[in-house]
Image (cartoon, rainbow, N blue to C red; front, side, top):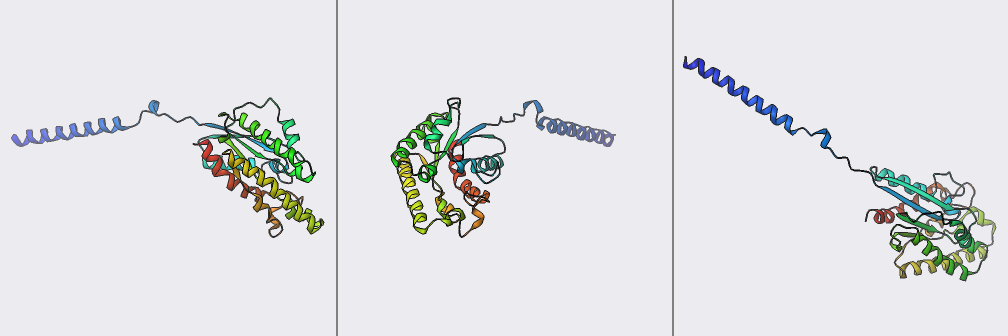
Length: 245
């Protein structure tokens, strides 16, 4: 008799433990209504410049602004990235200022600026470049959400003396082009350092154009997609630091 009741008691204990286990198990399952999926953050970049920004000689998505956006999307898949490009082949600092337009809102997380080669190419006054570069930097700053130079990135002027196009020039002229581009870049770099503006040198990449023809586009003058990829690799960490700071 005692053995019977002991067996029954043991059975009910087991059932009780099983019920408790089931209750605990289901209580640990996440409530689908309580799961919070973080919202994606939208980042907007404005790229100002000339043929080196718009990507003359390469596909529409092969220039550095679009490669930058594509890379950011891959590395930060939870967020959304967009770029507006205000650039055209042949633009000098004056032309860029005249074409930026007031319709651009001041809502950009980062503004990049690459300008000046056509000032040198057309032998425009260097004083004009000095004054208008400062104007463009202030315009760039005004287009950022912060209204601060912290969100402006300046990129050095490429050197077209190291392209097949320039090989028809005399050595003296090619040397002069490089020397003048150095002067432009030196002024820009010094001004950026003095005002704590991010400055990225990519000129050395373009000076490999003769020893590495893959860095020059099919037009024999502008950087190729591969060269822009190298630009992007230098620009990316600076931009990421700014948008996620």
